[in-house]
Length: 192
Image 1: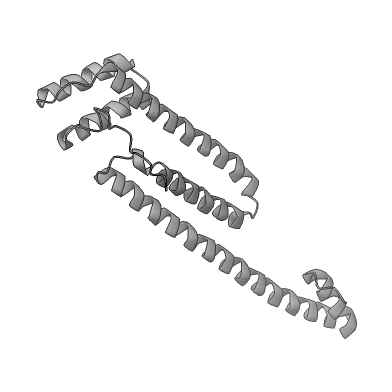
Image 2: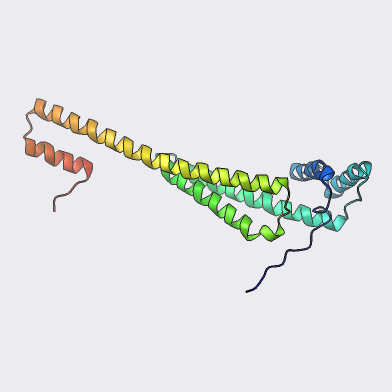
């Protein structure tokens, strides 16, 4: 059985807990795209120096920035797809949208588990996994609620339509056979 090896940890991965706030700041600055990557790295290294922590090399910071940019790009693509699909589902497709969200969350969890060897085991990673598990659980509940709600609405509609057909049929003098034929046509029930 082949074993997968965990990649070597980067100098950013090896930073002590005290540096997490500074690293988070640096990546937020990268996402904001208002400063150059070198300026952000220099500011990060200054913040680290004030805490007595060794600086991050340009290459290590660049690799982390590229990884983050890829992830941000991928999330942007997912947002665009969800936005495009949401317009498709606006007219009563809530159940389909709920299913799509649930499957997307499952795909994200699978992708994270597939890359688990590259994840740093820390409180943020644990929190991210816990949040995804909670999101999946919520999506699955939403799927069930959506399906149950649809069934309830269909049942309610069928009862009201049945009563309306009987009332109008009696008023207009329709035969019981004509009322039943109309109900079959309305509810999609075919003979044979």
